[in-house]
Image 1 (tube, rainbow, N blue to C red):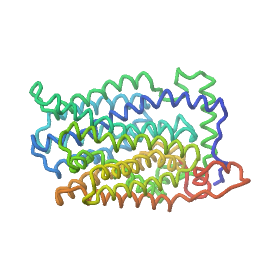
Image 2 (cartoon, rainbow, N blue to C red; image 1 turned 90 degrees about the vertical axis):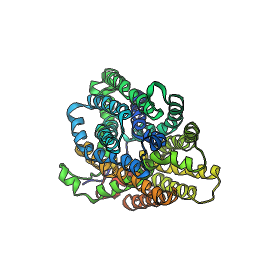
Image 3 (cartoon, one colour; image 1 turned 30 degrees about the vertical axis):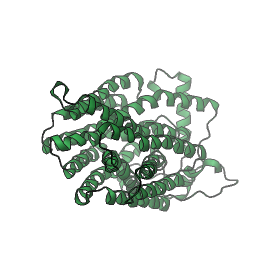
Image 4 (cartoon, one colour; image 1 turned 180 degrees about the vertical axis):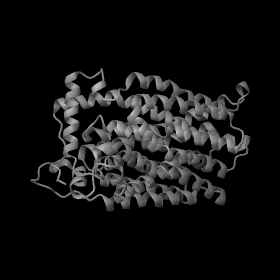
Length: 459
């Protein structure tokens, strides 16, 4: 095992090609993830009416929200194997059509068991998308551009929170009882079909590899290939060797998964329960709740991009993640204090939303700099599948706590503690950078420190 020379500093031509790739790929991936998140989390608003019309309890809703992640976790690694066999464009287009139709068909749900079955199927269909895109971007972009591209893509889940609220509130109030369908049924139908249309756009805009991209010149494809090769060579030591078994024996893989579990617990729980939290502040109209939900998610969307951009510019990952996680934990805890004015609770909730969303793109830059190249697709899917099990636990736990206490307070305290734990564990497993001074590549920042000082590191 050798020490890294440092992260790659791109010249003008390499930087131009990478920016061209970002402009081509990230808009369509962002929109796809926005619709993916919309179809995953729109039950948070649908349940405001389903609770009355179908008599679903908070525990029933919480279990249905969580069951999505059971199949999502189980099918992530198999989906990553399909990605290698089918190619990104074919896989993404196929599963987009599937999850769009599945989400739309939820208008037919009448019983808890039908609700559970639909959520389980939706988890199967969405399983390969998020880890697939993380791997896809790692195959196209060096680290100097990757975190920002992932941040743009990952902000789709936050922007979905901004859009789903007003859109869902509008649909549920405007279309309620039209054509014999309730507002929540129109919600599933109208928000499910855009994913089917996105599949067509993905087929047009995406290419499987730089070599197959007709929108890159031969010279640009060669420049990008050289840039990626040098980036891999200088990224340092590897978690794992040449086999999956070697990767699975690395303790830090599981610690990274735990950190991801902590980070995603907050965003999954909030996406499902923010409408109920806002309702608990004294707002009852679905449209008003939807409009107010723009405040925390809009704040989080802006902060996610800015924090990821600053992390890319400085090359520091460790404290960008930890400090954001700690701030989010404080925000969630303070938002749950009893007797707090609604405006102040909403402000603290916005800080909490920043904490649970802005950590994610920064996080992926660390395990992606730690897994051996031949194991990247499966390794990222494995970390994601373990970490995403938070979606099984967090929403259901929030539902049980709300049903037991009648309020979201204890659930928000729990999320704050979990988020804080994730920040502490990350600080423990990812060493800080030394001031390198004369060392070659000393300006590589925390990514180089991760590669050079941890015995098991790299993507």
